[in-house]
Length: 463
Image 1 (tube, rainbow, N blue to C red):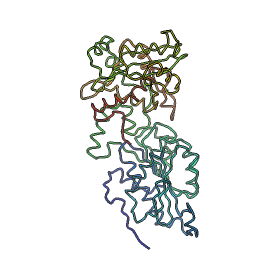
Image 2: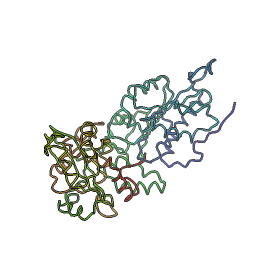
Image 3: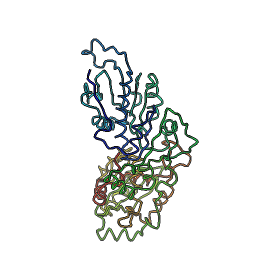
């Protein structure tokens, strides 16, 4: 028998919050943390530490190895553990972290194609995607690590993993940044003790088998990281800073673009036209939301070299056909006029109507299907409204003649009483807001201008 001494702190300098996690012996550990706070890093180490504890306790013994091991693709393991992420691509992060922790001498085989690791002694670690929870059918799990759990579907836990772990009294480790007061908050976080992440103290159940850990991105003391975090705080809207950096659950309510201020963001139409004539705009694209009973919308976004987006013009109209041969009263002809006036190089269009996009292309309009990404796109648009500290200006301006656009912008709100995922689905007319989101999220040129200005895209925060 070979005896290995494994020190989880070897070649690793944890911060104080990570040390607390490593020292805990509570069955279920829930880490709710800000981005880049080191949650996945400590999650991998605690996951492996728990496996070592099970081995030392003799869990799974006595165990009789299968006689026909060479013929079996997957023998019944002595101990089995799952690492679960929202997608397989995200589970690669778990594999990368564990590869830095597990000693090579303990590994029997690491099969990337099958997303599993066999440790010596018939101990199996499998990497699973929660994209389709029905595939998470298993029994007799000894432990599980769920990374970015708040992004998973509710049935991942309530329908499958909770039962698979119950057979053997398995433990769990949860590492995540919050996504609002969704099922993860209600069914997992509230099992433990109150933290400053949000909610009412009386709602927490204080179950001794659950332990909540909470820290922000600011608690990770790495100097270069803190420099980047500070830049994010200065460029992101407060609502997203509170969630992504300070890991709070209760931040989505009220006006979607809460930092919109008419005295700052609304500019005279004449100024927009003068800047266009003077060549101050380096690139112009448009966002397009289809409609008939509801208003269809085209918004024109003019970009400056320092990453400002000026909404200089728009068409907002219900009841107009896409194409009427010989008539100017249709979307194709109206958008052609806009394209000629503003020299628009691309129309980013709602992808739900591919036939409309084909009609545009056939008729000489440079239309392309937009990736929609509601929540991520809203965060992208919201990041343009804060006034930046380096020049005292926001990154978006809107012409004062766009009455419908401004009305939508003002009335676009999160529902007052919704909970869970619905709390982040805005209410009210959204036609112009959708068109704006398509433009901001999809324009590669605009992204390049932002990178040139900030050395980053403001809304993109690494996990």
